Image 1: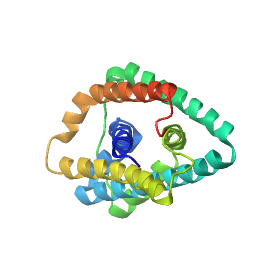
Image 2: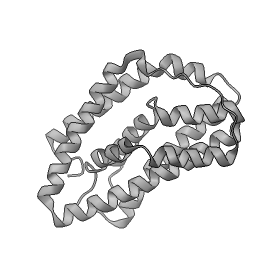
Image 3: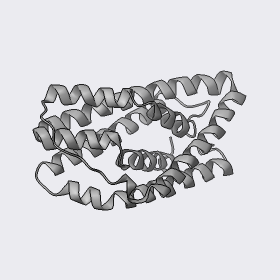
Image 4: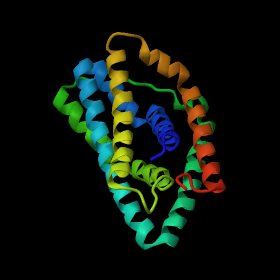
Length: 206
């Protein structure tokens, strides 16, 4: 995978992870309620769930691009439309996306369990991966390249939420996130719209 293509993948995954939502709120709640360890446990388990979805997506798309090119092309265009819709939604969110996280009594085991459940129980996550990763999968893509895609999505997700948990346990990161949530939404929206336009111009992986 070309380095420039990988950077594009990293940027989109990072914006997806940083965008305020139920996953971020989960990590914040467990960190506020139990400290650093439960917060990190929730972050790592959530990343494992994300990695599982990314693996299934890359595996399935890899089969489609080889056996059914027209269907894969249709999914690619539909994915571009979905990314554009997410971008517009993020831009229109404004301050509505600001976080209101409250503390909850928790343990590492409970945090890890809920982290996985939030990831696997979010149907929008698999739709996001189908829309996103369909732009990066090619017929000649090797197993190593597919593994890089899956690991990138998993590490970016886990790394961001671990950073949030560690920072929140001894700083004022929550107020910082709350104040800037609308800016994160706007940046995410612009990035997703740019990605959708790039797909219209031609395949990213081409």
